[in-house]
Amino acid sequence: MSRLARFRRRWRSHRLQARIARAQEVVGVFLPYRHAQDLRPTGAPELLPIFEAAEPAMRELLTTIEGFADAFARFGGPAPAPRFEQDWFPGLDALAAYALVRSRAPRQIVEIGSGHSTRIMARAMADGGLATRITAIDPAPRAALRDLPVTWHAQLLQASDPALVDRLAPGDILFVDSSHLLVAGSDVEWVLTRLLPRVRPGVLLHVHDVFLPDPYPPNWAWRGYNEQAALVPLLLGGWRLLWTSHYLRTHRPQLLQDNLAAHVPPPEGAFESSLWLERTPACVPPHRSGNPGSGRKAKRRLGAS
Image (cartoon, rainbow, N blue to C red):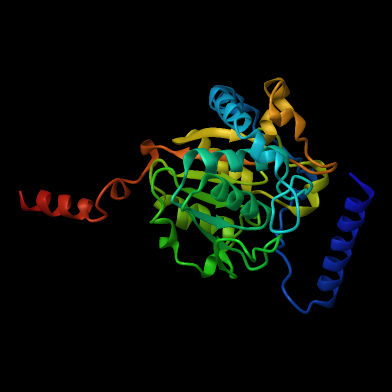
């Protein structure tokens, strides 16, 4: 960790402790647990076969990334131009997001948590001449969104209508970079319980800060993130794994050799952590596979027979 990163961490911790001491506002969630002193971070090594089986899809996307080398060479410049020299959405995360938007040409992107990723996807839209519409939901984006072709809602996700994902069609993207905290009423709970059940087959899902099959980085323990454990059922239940930045960089670095990705490492202290999935028909509730009223009609017919 760089000296600047250590300073920022200490400063954030100091500010949080000061706010808690003043007891003037709710600043977090305390979860009492009698065995807390015995807790140790754990990964999910049982998922390794799923990641290994997805390597052909990752290789395919690496080939797609290589085809956009000229476009990546033009990254940089004043905001809102995208750049690799930032630690919010670095390296493989940026490469994969750009390549998927260019190659899939989505009509709609719903982005929960915005900033550098928005800039990268907007550049992909411009370079590809795409008519993609981005709807960004974030009360405080990490990077300014002005001068970008984005419909920005400066609010918490929980203040949004869950039907916003109903318009996503195959090839469209639900992009999630949330608080990473699964607690009652959080944005993570909202995504899992209110949005994902509405997502149609063929829609791509991105989730950031996912380190599966490994635990979160040790120096992130103070954050209390727990979102990635809630994603394990998705990997087991009908969402096709397309890409995972952390797995590639740490478990399969040999796949990055002789590829553009090998020359775009993350800045010191930054982590690549994008996870991309595609919803398959196997996990769509019956009423979402066609007309929302078809199930009710079938019951009426059955009762009348």
